[in-house]
Image 1: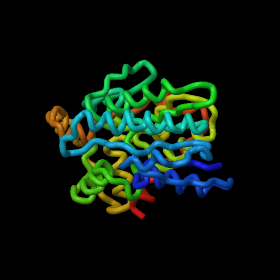
Image 2 (image 1 turned 120 degrees about the vertical axis):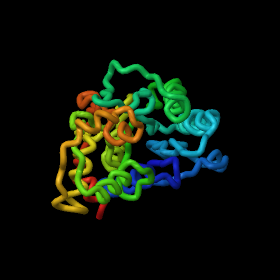
Image 3 (image 1 turned 90 degrees about the vertical axis):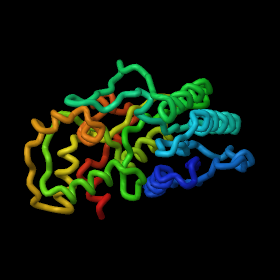
Image 4 (image 1 turned 30 degrees about the vertical axis):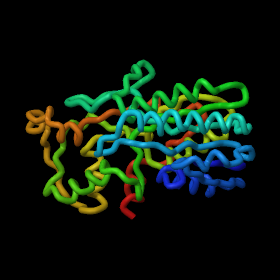
Length: 287
């Protein structure tokens, strides 16, 4: 089996390629960049599947919406057109939970299910949804598109401040403030995502797959796991009464709020991909 991963310098792309190569079956993985037009000269005819991991994600500096659209929608569509013309059978597009446009809220979190409308905010989420629709227009009996709507991806070496921010908070605070335990965030360990990519690449069907770890986690669960690794014995204190006074604060909402998939909605008909549990994944993150 020969697979092409689009996003030569992508963290997710590289981890996915390593995951594929560790399979007990012959797999050849190649990588390609789409930062310039040289990819247009590539021969795609020998590939069974393409994993499209290149993207512009949330950034602190302001990115014009047309840049998001160009990179996250128009370019994947152009690449998929070339792949279909070359005879590639399976195209796997890494999308995002942000296509639902749900924001963290307190005191209750947001749960996304099959009835949740697609109302992404302008920028990253809206551009990914545009990409999904363009790619789906190419589907036929010989060209299948798998769309993975990933929750927050994390793993050792992953850029982004969500998990590293919790690590800093856990190490700095004298106690762990316990609050809003029923408000959970959907997370997706990069190896679980890679396994879902593997299942999709080996399928011969199209589909949309909401993806997260088997169990979403609350803020105190994240800090509890981390404390057990980096500062064992740190005590927890009940803080919900106090923090409810500040639940409208953006920092409190970011820390304790959550958006997750309904567990049944995140199951995949292609097979089991939720292989690693959150605690094991965090231990790998700290190793």
